[in-house]
Amino acid sequence: MKRGDYKDAFLVLAGPDDRGYGSTVKGFIDRFQVSSQVFLAGMVQGERKITLISRADIYTLPSYSEGFSM
Image (cartoon, rainbow, N blue to C red; front, side, top):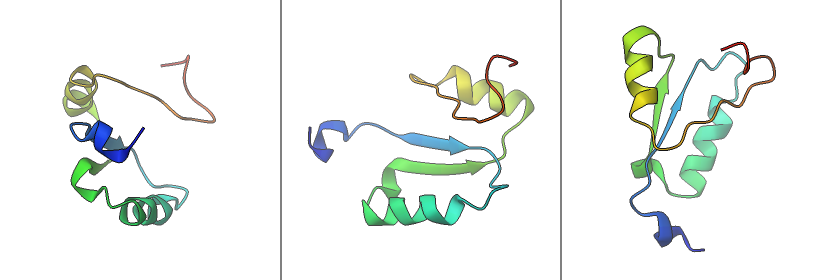
């Protein structure tokens, strides 16, 4: 697969940066030159969160402490 294979893909990363990993993520975005295909939404709650999730084609919850409880 090549990067061009996913030219219509758009990644939304939502959630707080409470562990300071945001600068690493921004580094990856810059390194792979995908800033036009990535949106860092920050913390999203309430109706905005429901709307964001409902519009996603793919949803993942990478977490050490949550998952089934939601």
